[in-house]
Length: 257
Ligand code: MG
Image 1 (cartoon, protein in one colour):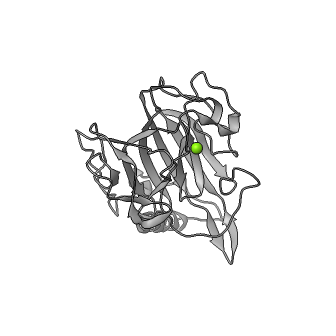
Image 2 (spheres, helix red, strand yellow; image 1 turned 30 degrees about the vertical axis):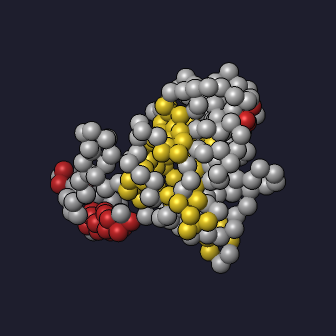
Image 3 (cartoon, protein in one colour; image 1 turned 60 degrees about the horizontal axis):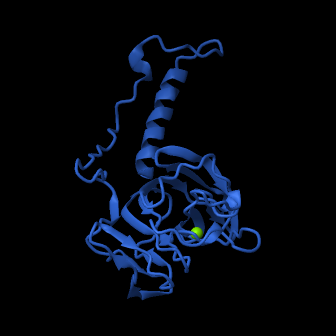
């Protein structure tokens, strides 16, 4: 995709240079014909949407309910993901079995994921239906049953845990499915230092809750965010322990780079 963007940029710059070649007396001449500002090549890729699943044709499907083979235990990459596969196309956190992560590693991505808090309410504050979508295993988009359940706003559902406050709380009723659509740009590192922060845009049930938000660093329960250099890393889902019991379904990724 980057190659396409670079090629498109090259064509655009070439087109601009053609326009600039028409300069006279130091002033730029505005194009006088419509086709002077048209770009026709290269053609952009066609993406088809599956009418049944809604999944784009160029997506990497990470979970469709049929198996959990794309996932492993985060504590041991040789151990299959120990979560519960349900009969309805979803999987559920098996409490205290640990986090799970994808076998594949990712950088920047478009991610679609659906989640559901347990209908049977247990616990309160951060102990009610807590899980999380960890981008590159480091940056948590919080999953929490926040309905009639107060907590600190930088740790509520849809936050980048501890470091960003979402613009809105758009949760479905407890026990019903939510969707996150996430556009994530990974941070850049050079010579051991971060040279560009990662950013994240999140739509919760179609509502914009994080708008190209700068990620300050890794999610830390205690302490400041860290910025240890890294490359591509797996996507991770959190087992928060007691009263997590969160379910997930329909997970797919489109790689941006
Ligand atoms: Mg969490």
